[in-house]
Image (tube, rainbow, N blue to C red; front, side, top):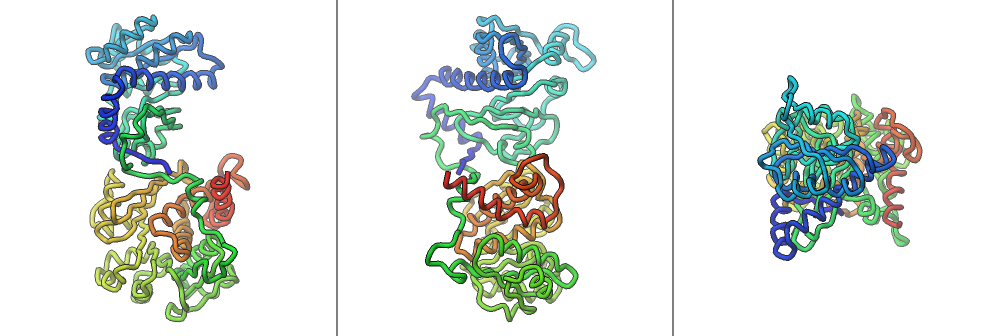
Length: 502
């Protein structure tokens, strides 16, 4: 499991490190890693380093210093290096000295003969003719989009960009991108991943994130966020043991769908079937349709006739009228873990009395998209999705899975898992119904609610990618429907199991 730390945590850890290791030595170590990654990008793009043109976009502060030192290392490998200074009076003195000694070229962003955008002729020529660019414009303390001169320089770049610590212009804490920002080919970060590397549009802007060890491990403390890897999911995914039977593997109850929306029932029940190999019970108006698609499901038309279950997946397509409310009352009073989605969330949001039916110790999972989240919280979802999910999870004493390209999973005690899809293949009607069935099945098998959401989200995303790219995940992606995503679940589970066994 990968940890993610805030800029404040990283800075505090660095200060402790500097009591043991001089700061200039740490900077040179970090800069050397940036130079290595830039050299690798150059080799992949152009076949070598010697004679290639590297441009450093240099702001004030240590990120600019890292870029300058990286330029000095690249000069020693024969690259032609030009540093474009956006704030000449704030450029890192030791870094400038190192680049000058290596006979690197230094120009000002708004130097001689500026064009109509205010960019100096030398800076414009360097950026437009670069084979690779190192982004050292801003650091972890920055907020907001790039300023106009920096934004114009970045706009003119056609070469791959290697970002120092983060792509300039993204918010390091929330991952928000609210204006001009760097699109990096590679981001080289130091000591630990930051929220911008795993959240929202900033994660996409970061490209391939390369983590460099600079000696912070003993000083970092507990991470702010966690990211599951395939091996983590595969190691803990429930599989039948020799002594298991269909009951001991978990009996999941699915309350979804209606005569108007039978597909929600088919998808949620099918996801439960494909997630575990125990027993799935369906209760609702779409019983005949569910049986036709999934003969292994024990289907009944009434929630009161469902039989014994160990968890409930409820909400997709049940409606928000009196019948949907009756279903919610039944599952909340059952005392079993509940995954509530779609209409179930709307019912809970508009009828606070439903919360009184909930058994206090029964785990509850809420899986809202942005609109449903607004109904639950009473406020519009802002740029801080992690903070918002944490607040609602604590308010309702529930695990909140906030859907999106980056899924945020908050536990009532403040723990947060993040699953970044790096793609949008799950953005299709019915995809949430599949996720609901998967989470419910994991809950029934005894998996902790927070972890069940993380495991299901990871496999759900992986199944969508496999389905979009065809068998085995090869080839370019093509649009998919939720049925194709559902069909990809078994293969996605096999891939995470294989990662755990590797």
